[in-house]
Every structure is written in C-alpha cells, then in structure tokens.
Length: 116
Ligand SMILES: [Zn+2]
Image: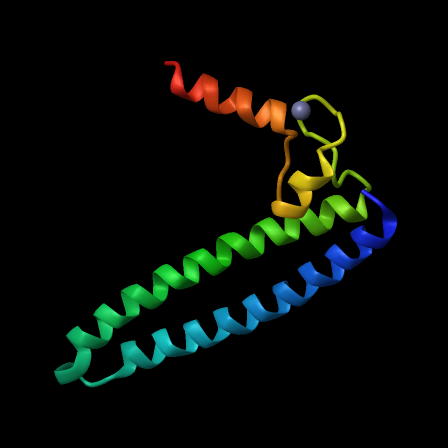
C-alpha cells in the first residue's frame, strides 16, 4: 500500500479508536447507572443493560482489531498476509483494513472450515 494512503488509514483508525473508546465509556456509564437504579426500575434497566452490554462487546471487539492493525502498522507488518507472507491486495485492505490474510489464504480458510 502506498505510504500516503497508509498514513491516511492510520489516522482514520486512530480517530475511530478515539470514538469507540468514548462510546465504550458512555456505555459503561449507562450500565453502572442501570445497576444503581432502585429495584422498581431494575428489571427494565437490566434488560436495557444487556442490550448496552452487547453494544459494548461489539465496540470492544472492534477496538481490539484496530489495536492489532495499528500495532502491525508500527512494526511494518501491515498489509502482509500472516499465513503466506505475501502482500495483501490493496483493494481488500481498503474494504477491510483489519484483514490479516490475503484473499487466497482467507478463501482457503473458509473452504477448510466448510469441510470437516
Ligand atoms: Zn496469504
């Protein structure tokens, strides 16, 4: 990937990381408020809390992917397939910057998963 687009992607990821961290903080604050609510409201609050927690898990998963991707950028491994060591297709990285494998290895994975 060209250095310019890589730098652009890096700042995009950093921005996204900031947003997700802020969202997670809000979600956590909401959850805490739910648990502290009085018992009359508690069952509904807990239901809301579960939804909020699911959202939190999604944000956490994405944050983890972003961290891995940023770390790979730091170490110069970004855009290199973890299986075969070949460069990952630029279009694939644009569509899915968290990709760790080239399209060939990712496709092979799917096939071996389909076959027991
Ligand atoms: Zn590969």
